[in-house]
Amino acid sequence: MHLFRTKKIKIPTNHYLGEVLDSAYYGNFNTKIRFSLKINDSIITSSPILFSLDSTLFLPYNQRVLIKLDNLLNDEKNLKPKENKIIQITKCMVLRENHKLLESIKCLQNTLVEFPNFSKAQYLLGNYLLIFASKNEKSLNDMQVNIIISEAINLWQSVDKDNQYFYNKAKDNIMSFKKYLLSENQLLNKNDDNLIIINGKYYSSFHKLFKKPIELQLKVK
Image (cartoon, rainbow, N blue to C red; front, side):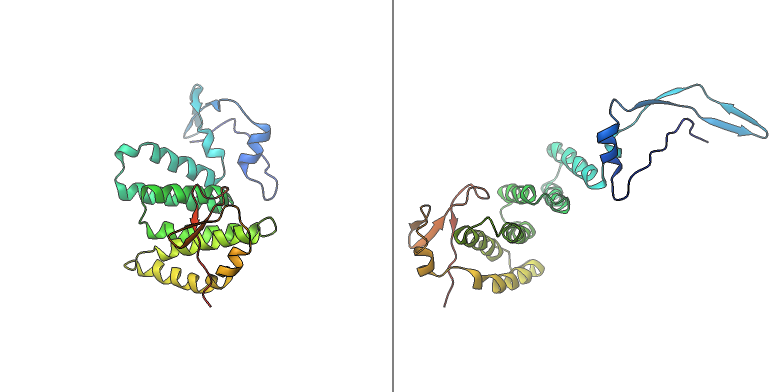
């Protein structure tokens, strides 16, 4: 069986077909196909058959995965909580693989609103926050970096001990990053307008990443 009237597209090196289509091809992706059947020396060809292509098949793999995951999440009423949780965190990880770091952070934050004790999400969100701080170190001030590290440690400290894999990795991360925290004297010398004290604990805000003030961790001498 052969597909007639196909058109070859030369894709430049390191380009996705989706990128080529975005710039050069558009429309409803409807076409006509014929089928042929060879019997001995004779070939029987069908009449044209209208055929509609799924345009998402031309997208890069990770984009297709995101569309599939969103479709599954939109059918939430048919999902069990465990399935919903797995799909949500998979989406967050695919966003990270697509270099959409801020979106992946927001995705994990939303996941933890629905599943607040989800150890894997707590661990990954702490990691992604530190990656954000590293990638934006030139534009962040000391106070903002301290807020991000504090929240990462808060998340890692919340990882359930019963989940030994993520608990041990989170504990290692805390040991690695707590040395970068500000001491109490350093914190007070920053003259941060957002700094508040509640029951002896310090809180501050970084609205680009967090909707509410973050409890600050302090360097222990």
